[in-house]
Length: 388
Image (tube, rainbow, N blue to C red; front, side, top):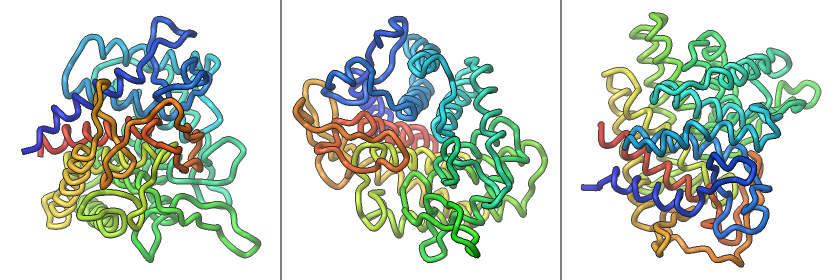
């Protein structure tokens, strides 16, 4: 029997012990250094990847739900203010995906821990709602201000956040738009995004397949349905239809992105470091939501929950078995089939700070993203598999 809670606790101790530091610009707070061992830019937080920090924050919320600790609650309470201070005193930045990720973390801290982040959440949700455009692409928000690329990493977390915040009309429209334009008919997987096409062409599709985009659509399906049920706006037909879509997508993940239920990446290609280090962990988080939150007792709902649990258990187990260990704790690698390696100070650091930066460092284990991705995956297993 796997002890998912113990594995998640050890992952947290290791990742925070190496990466959690007091930033010079906010000595009352903590943030996570983006590389370990760090160079000067990472040691001083001159290198700062907003959405990585948002995922550390949400994973801290996962950990607090697993094991309530006063010190961790204080870190969570101060984290968003430190992020804003490092972001030149602003909650928002030009990247809608970044602010949607932070919004999800803050919403969970409010919803699950009883904390209060009303002001930043109001600004984030208002900015996301204003960015919606029914124009040439039929809906969606761009991934950044002034850009026409409308991708799942911006629209997925936006949909989940707005559904959870009660803005069901916009969230429902966003989910319908994602389902209509971002599902690849050949694989059943979610593509990365769409952009305006040439004259006479409705739009062009970016057919890159990333693990986290699959998780985002799964999370959006579950969030919109549960919000609609809570408001009395959905019934058995909607439950059955959602279960069918979720079951098909989880099955496509198993077919195209997993090896013996272990999630690796599209056609068995690992996603390595930089931004890609977070991708499998994000998929795991929303596979966990399928396990715990997908309503329905019909055959497709039951099968979707069972397959999601199998994928989560196999992926978490492989990640844990292939960890590396030294005096600073456990280290995770980017490919759960391969033993992790322990980085050294001379190893190159991944430049990733955008949705397009999915290339690997010389040794991806050095990236915060890879370590948090492993920790996130184990927290998802602890939350979902210990309850299912």
